[in-house]
Image (cartoon, helix red, strand yellow):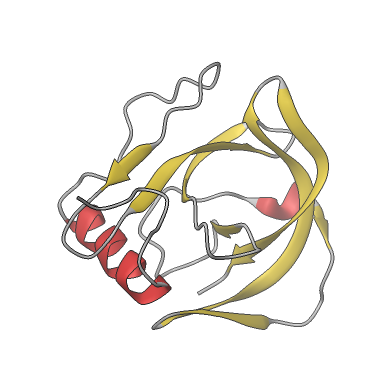
Length: 137
């Protein structure tokens, strides 16, 4: 039996997440933000934790991978042409970097900028100036 608290390395998580996306499993039903709900995909490649976050003053609900092996929140940006999930327009937040940077996760390479904005796991649990990575490509 696999241990849900011991996910495989980043490359396996990325493949499992991409497989779930292709199968249409990444889409959550209407996000209920009063109770945090997280989908767990326990496929052959390891576990992927997928769930909603509430982003920005606009309270946009976005699905994210809860990557237990990363110290960055990476969110798909609205200007990202290669992103496949729902996206977030960070332009109302505060851009904390002016230079395009890169984050590497296993075989995935993400480019984007760091921003600060309100991030919530439910309406009553928010951080007002949370720094995150907004994916450009």
